[in-house]
Length: 544
Image (tube, rainbow, N blue to C red):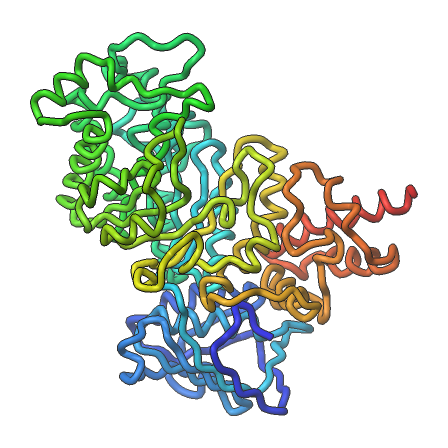
């Protein structure tokens, strides 16, 4: 078995071994990126470009020119040949190669096979929330490697929320930067690394909501309406002209760092009355003036006016804008440009925005292309007990749920795993247990759009993808946590009752994980996290 599963595989009977000193014969255009990617996938190996007698030979195949991510790979004792039309096809082949091989005693174990493969979803990725708590840069890079091994091609970086911005932007005063904010040089390095991994990085700067930090440093961006007692104001005053100057400077500064074709403006949750969060546009003199000057009838039209202004800035910079779509009022029609990509997560409800006649299906009917990050099926944490779990993910179909009619399914580009929850040390620790298998399983779901089956073989292969080629043969680390995704509760004890394996089996798993210098880079950190789980489980089971 291969995860993500491949479309077609014809296995031979021969098993053979090759050196961890890998040579690859590839065109100059792809050479550097291919070497970086393969060494990231297989940190046990060194990779070098070689024009003759190379282990891996890459052949440009015009027959695959209409499928940028398709590839064919032939693995034999005489060598490995990869056929592809573009670099993404090669990246996908190398990612598959990395989860096929096993590494032991300085050699790679392979078997004869021929694989033909291509993805179902165009947009396959994860959104990483680093606005609240800045994840160490090395850990962020490790996440990208695992995403690439899962054959994802998008990484959305959530940079700004009410606590501030996690990137050192000169357009904002330093007291807007959260502690440990990334430097521009780090983000440029991340984008270059992601490019080698076949991943497009999408920066998100949330607006006009989630903007509490802006109020602290720009008093003029507050609405001048009185605030309701007990309520927190969430949204900037879009009637303030200087706001658009700031956003244009911010967007241009961000896009100078992130060279990809997309910018995500956020745009969700401008009001959450059920959480005591309000928007003051209706009673603000500056907002009323804006409406009068531009013929805007109500707050919804004011919101659309704001979105169009931001989209104009993004389009002027030569990029495509993405936005969360929960504030669309579908019965009003397609009042926003169709060049905006809608990022669906859920429909608002009475205390949070437009809801009557609204759905993902209704948004698609307006002609928009959609990224479907349906809540809670794709959410790793929400602050609520309802989040994705192994059962909901197993059944979910990204091009059908919720309520997407067949005629609109071509407009659903794919999905992103939404990695919220870096808000405390405990949650960060929980996320490190939850995230690895969630990334790989979401990659599998987006690549194939099929129902997952958590067989013993699936769990062993999932362990191998998550922990790398040096993992002992047959190891199923998920036996030690009772599920392929840890339970939603945040404390470690929550999963102990699910573990059914014997104490002897737990000791075997611990021994397989506690191997210094076996697991490298991100694999080592993940092995340590699972070791903590297994050790705790054994302690608790032994107490009974």
